[in-house]
Length: 282
Image 1 (cartoon, rainbow, N blue to C red):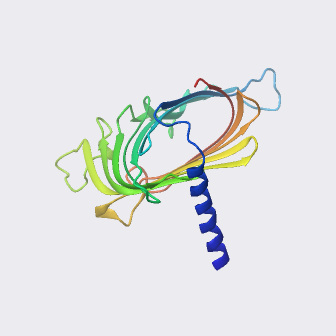
Image 2 (tube, rainbow, N blue to C red; image 1 turned 180 degrees about the vertical axis):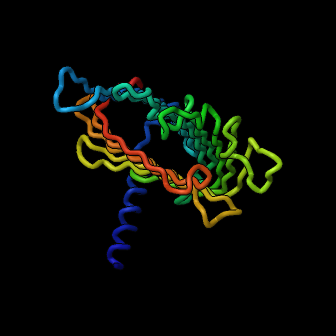
Image 3 (cartoon, rainbow, N blue to C red; image 1 turned 120 degrees about the vertical axis):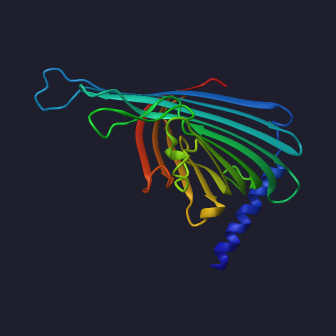
């Protein structure tokens, strides 16, 4: 056990030393990145005697990154969006992806293993979201209804290319309009709140692991707990395995786990396997 702990500490130290020895060519300039993607799944039948229905599913994704790094500080921005629909036979067209996520992190290098940081993130839907449990569709969400804005201040570790993590004091605002169940306080039955403010603890960990020459695993785990309910944590765990076939064709395996007691008393899970076209603009 001691050998294992020593090996882990040695590996971590090696990563830090290597990152310091290698010259950084990204200093004092903006480094942007834009990637667009289209995932399509389609099947059609004609005079088919073995059963089945025509189906079409598509998802458009976009990712924008912009980083500015100086000698003592770093400012990272990330914008991710996804929207998709599916239609099976004569059923209604159903929304399968519908999300907009924006995150900005400012950190300052003070010479420690961890650096102080300030972050701001935004999460909402791009368009109207529906519940398809019954034969008809029922609206359950819309753009910024609900919308989640979270500010956090604390310390971050970002000296490794594999794992980056931060922990801090967080302020979370939930904004609604029509769908007030996400923001309403059940302890005030005579009043319906469209805004909820919570103070608590936030932890965010990003993981990037190359599994093979053309296969990569990317994971983002976000945790939040308000001070008045530290026994309950909101969880958002986003996972992506990408296998590159060539410069513009990928196979993507996604898995998203969400636990938010206000949204649902049980964990929510979404999994997808898609063949996608990606194009790197910057």
